[in-house]
Image (tube, rainbow, N blue to C red; front, side, top):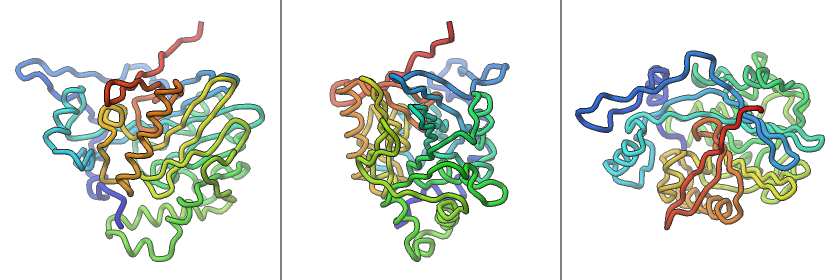
Length: 327
């Protein structure tokens, strides 16, 4: 079963043009709007309190991929119409990469480690932004992996192929580990996908990372429990954080799009390994978050990827968190 679409060819093609992102023209005859980054340095971190937990969202950068792999169970015209109506490029999907760093009690937990210098030139910014946020990587106590796709795990190795955070405890889903480490997997996928399998295996096998296998309900640190959100990969996990009366779910790629995952939760992508399971996991998170007013962190949502979800008839609506400047 091949779970890694779009192909490497598509990725490399889009990576080469990713920095030249512009908004599509959505009103014929009108001048095309063009919004870009401010000339001053962009903020690479966002910090807020969740009860007694201090949460910092750290950007690893961004990348762009063809939308041909987006919502593959919907009519192409309908998908492009939705994207255009929401002022998004119908041909190229722009993805942020937002990492949660959670400090609660004695635990300092980093969710995923980014892609390092092994994926896109526009990613690999995690540790630079960590420094900007005043976070000492040597003090990280836990590394929680949502899944083993390149943008989430390839940054685990330093230039000497050793664990970049050797003093941390590492956690990965038992099902996720077993999927990627099964004999013969690389030979069972398409040739252009084999590097992704090899990359996952090399990352999991990195020297200095002693993995602890976890499953639904396991507590990795006080106030932080594992949520199984299978589908995007066979063993995909999310992380539930609670402090006082506040709750947060770090969703990983269970919710992969800041618009489609809410308005069209039944649509899935070609990269989703188990499509029906992906949709079920997504709906479970959305239902819980809407009912209990749970804060969500979306890895590929527009930075910082923090917000809430509201019911909107049979659909859902994402409500981004209010950015508050220090007073």
